[in-house]
Amino acid sequence: MVKIFKKAFWVVLPACVVAIFLWPRENNQNSIDVSEVSFNLKLNKFDSTFFNLPLENFDSSLSLLREEYPSFFTNTSNQFWYYQRNDDLQNKLYKEVKNSVNHAQVQRDIEDLLKHFYYFYPEAPKYEMTTYISNLDFYNPVIIQDSVQRIFLATDDYLGPNHPAYAQIDDYLAFYRDARFIQSEVAENIAMGIAAINNDDLTLLNQMIWWGKIMYAKKQWLPKVKEDVIMRYDKTKWQFCVDTELDMWLFLVKEKLLFDTNEETKRRFVYLAPFSKFYTDFDNRSPGMVGQWLG
Image 1: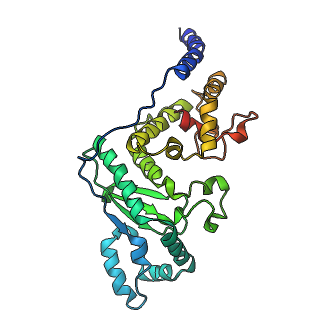
Image 2: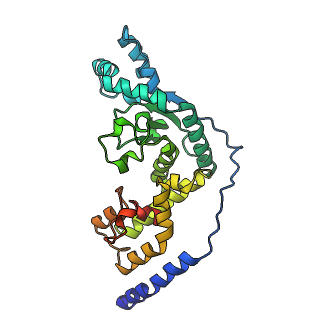
Image 3: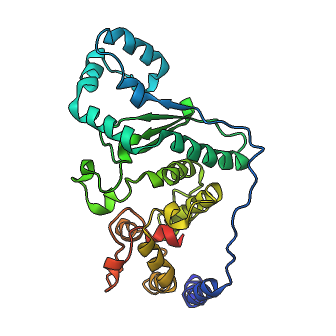
């Protein structure tokens, strides 16, 4: 009986994929009125506060900072922070941040994002945002710390994709280091913390559905942001997905990859990469993470 069901499933699934693809789609713009959501984002500039500490009487000035920003000072000595304050690279990064990152715009953008978030989740923690210099920690540009109701933003990770500070990383990774993606990255980190997922289901499809929830949430919270920016694709890569959506679905169905539990399959289609691996002639034109887009 199980074998009969599986055979029927693989016969019916391609037809369902085509039907979904051809189903009329409405371009529903989120028109939620958040004017009644009472929230003002507090922005704490650890970056500018720290790099303007006077070197004379540094210890006494730092003690006040320890009280205000305890998250930064776990198991660290004053000497460590003195070296950080005098580090040439970090001081250069701070100067670049001052020239490249508009803190006031970031505050407005994240406040708008969070107002939409609180419309759906009024009991969620009321976040503050803290900006800091991470010494180019590309793996953690945004950190959500619910225990202290803070969003930490590494401002030196958003100097622009062509900035010399990013010369040592691949172009496809430098692409994400653009300030226009700050809203999207913050929204994604919040959504990842609340989107339900069955951790016992190791299939590609389960990962795609989870990312689909995250992307849907981002679209609801960022109604004025273009979809390619929400997904953090350039327009060419986004258009590739639009143009080849049916082909991608049929490929995954034909190759029976949707229920594949191989970690390599997720690397091919879900994880961050310069392109997705269909092992066809259009691989180099595809963006990475098409499984997230399809989800």
